[in-house]
Amino acid sequence: MGGRVEFVQVELAGLSDPARSARMAAYMKTDAPFYGVRKPALAPVFREMLARFPVRSRADYTRSVLELWALPHREEKYLAIDLARAYPAYRTIGSMPLYRRLIVEGAWWDLVDGVAADLVGGVLRDDQTRGSATVRRWIDHPDLWLRRTAIICQLRHRADTDEAMLFDFCLRRAHEREFFIRKAIGWALREYAKTAPEQVRAFVLAHRGRWSGLTFREATKHL
Image (cartoon, rainbow, N blue to C red; front, side):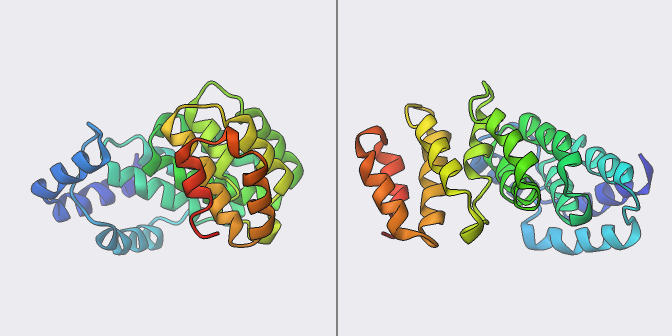
């Protein structure tokens, strides 16, 4: 396990707040344990962890992320995702199996969405051909969270958004009744509307009958 895990566990245990941990678990609707450490208090722990235990290779990157990910508390998993974000040199197509694992095992929005937008989205932006081939396999996958990832992975792309792929993905999942898919479609369209409002307006209205009320409200929130 090494020093990184021991450091994180000691630091978070020292910051733990049992009352807040119960509230955080209730808010997230999960049985996973929390230390009860708020995000601002996690930041200095993360910075010190990076300084003490830098990642020095791709194999070390994967191993380091997974050793934190394997710990039981939610904050430890947040730090695993933050660690994966901290090394853009390793945010390449070769890391997609790692990111897929985080998505499938995370299986809840607080763990999946950052991986989708920052990690998978980063790979897609930097390696459009191979990245898009991966998310095109995910859009029809039985796993809900891989489908959601395919829809929202371009949230940060703005003018670099592959509009045709985004619109195709939204239409392919428009029939779903699952809340997290309906919400994802609306969210992805709302974000892209900040860059291309007329294109989104025309697309949403052209297919008005296919959207759930939730999707339509989210997509048109700022139009």
